Amino acid sequence: MPLFVLTCLDRPNSLALRMATRDAHLAYAGARRDALKLGGPLLDEAGDMTGSLMILEAADLAAAEAFSAADPYRRAGLFERVEIKPFRVTLGQL
Image (tube, rainbow, N blue to C red; front, side, top):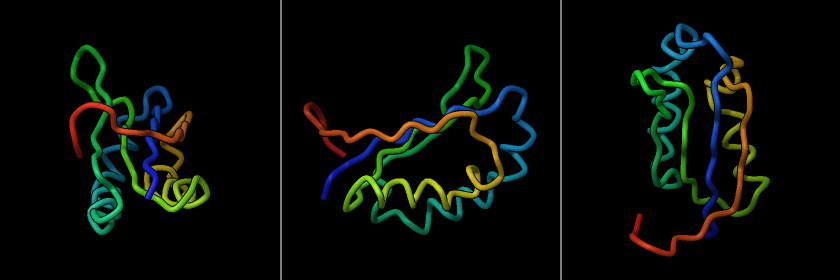
């Protein structure tokens, strides 16, 4: 199955919204560990969370977009921008 990289950038000054929605997001992602191969927050220089990066195995781009659309972070309006791109591992392994 193909892999996709989801790069999700938070809206400015939205750390409180991220923290309020974090448990729901982690539950959503955790229930999909068969498809979600890697995930975690993007950080600024101070170490504060400013976005998310996920590597997802999905049947196609539409399935990856559906996964993203149902994420509690996205449903709460946390993200300013979401980019989903096909991905192929060249070095290392998941």
